[in-house]
Amino acid sequence: MSQNFGHFGVQRDRLPLHGLKIHLDNDPRFIGTKFRIYLKHSGHSMQARHNLEELERIATRLRMHVVDMVAPSGQGYVQQGLGAADIFTSLFFAEATIDSANPTWPDRDRVFLTTAHNTAIFYATLAERGFFDTEQLATYVADGSALEINASERMGPFIEATCGSLGQGLSVAVGCALAARRQGRASRVYVIVGDGEMQEGQVWEAAMFAGAKGLANLCLIVDYNFVQCEGPMDLVMSLEPLTDKMESFGFACQEVDGNDIGALLAAYDQARETRGKASFIKANTLMGKGVASLEGLMFHQLRFPPEVAASARAELEAQL
Ligand SMILES: Cc1ncc(C[n+]2csc(CCOP(=O)(O)OP(=O)(O)O)c2C)c(N)n1
Ligand SMILES: [Mg+2]
Image (cartoon, rainbow, N blue to C red):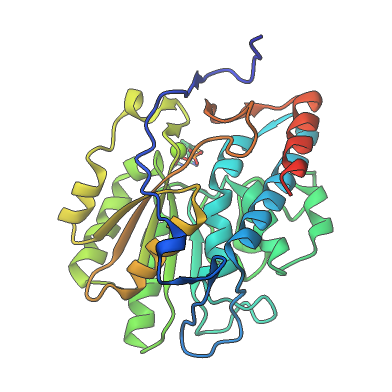
């Protein structure tokens, strides 16, 4: 049976995920039953610390929110939200030092989502992390709602920058990283950029600056889901060899399975320990991750009829 999900797309069944699996049981950073003991900025109480299984449950909950939020409009950024849930979970619930009670705390880490259209997962994450009430998620993209399709600073100070115009967010983030370094702050700056967005010229200008200045407090993560508006990356305009390019710009590069929370955490660890260089993480994500019937369907905007949403919801719920 074939389901018509959208106006453009291909089934992604054989595209390789160049994932680097980390076997947590053998990883000295994890103890016993995969508990992550990790203290950053010595003794901060702001960081949510969870074990890996708990983080995976959080990611599933976030995916359920994505389904619930997009379902009423029958179309939207389902595939990107499901695919990026592990990046958001690992950053907001483990890596980034942020305080939902004090979102403008100057020494916080900054997390920028420059693909500002990927809001279902972004808002779900912020709400679950305590920045606003999860009940508000039900208003997503409704007329008059603060939860607009593109995240903007209008929503609150926890949105670090308005980034709907693709390509601009990294420049803002680089400026923040430079300012933090000049001010002697421990803050780190994390930036999630889209693979399609990486084609924007301004991204490379900002990357050149970050590389030249050795911004070691900057961690650029590309959500490499292989899709941009017009179709698969390789058919529109390939970025490859991306890590070689970023390396030549002065970045310390890693490539990970962006749906493996343990691998993402290990990559952040390595980035944090890197001296004198900005970090680049190519996080390969699978569109629709977590819902078998949607995995690998490469649609920029997925048509999402109620029956598909209901079965996706049930499938995710069973994973909790
Ligand atoms: C400068 C600019 N050009 C075009 C758009 C319209 N647009 C919104 S999303 C998108 C595709 C982005 O692809 P990608 O960065 O791979 O993000 P994904 O949806 O795959 O996460 C485009 C072209 C925009 N928002 N900004
Ligand atoms: Mg993409």
